[in-house]
Length: 406
Image (cartoon, rainbow, N blue to C red; front, side, top):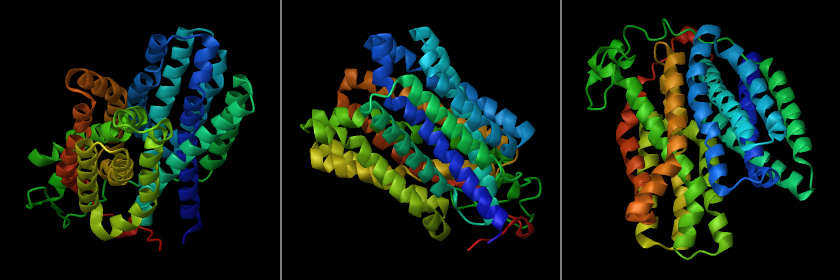
């Protein structure tokens, strides 16, 4: 195994870890920040929209910066910048100053997400096999670590300033060290040889121009990838806010309700550790299609049966089933011409879903009830299964660009 390639994979994985840990460090101490600033629930809800709004702009900026500077440069700088607003959180002395800091946090988060996924796809192309799923698993592990760090500091009554500043400095150092192992992007201009073909969703065979995003079918690739990531964000982010609420709705006690999001996350993280192996055997299309159909079936069963135990099991299956969608979408985006711009669009769509999921579910539940509103997630998963063939945009890597790693 080439040592620089192994080092690059480790470096990108470290940045994924940092990305997950930073936001989780903030999220774990939201109640303490609310108490310190004496924010009402309504004002807090408005302030908490800041990261989502910032991420929309950050994902677009990330695409432009990666296009101009390359993913190695942006992946080296963006995580360090991301640590800055985390350290600034304690300096906010009003709702509006806190929202300004969170807008910056969200913008840096969105930019980092696009850059690190672009660098990860570049490393994956050099490997000649799937490795992106494991990196997304490491991001989730980073989120768990950041959340546990927040719990530990809260239990020790550590001041908010000490926690946020120490975490920001530590994670900035990790990011700076990881930057040393990043590699230049794989060039895309000649990656698809003239003899290569891609199978379309209807079973027909398109030439390389269609598969690469040109021609009447190829022009739909980018919007369909964006739609896929938007729907995946709805399914992935809804359990954070609504799994506990639904479990209480069907009679679960407080402990079981609190376990809802943990069950979903556990299914997602564990499955992502194996998804790279599955991609090499099933391909992205079949893996995403099987997974999302299982996700849709599990969520439907949970909503129809309304039993706490069934719901917890369904959340594990749902987390596992949806886990390959984001890595598959970014892999497909990375194979297209002008991949940095496409990844910016994919990141924007995912962040838009993250921003809108709670208002959508909340509004629908007011009109039709919570179980029916949550049925939207099962529908979204089923639609993703139908969109899975869009990942056929992934073009084969030319032999001279591959460094096949066992």
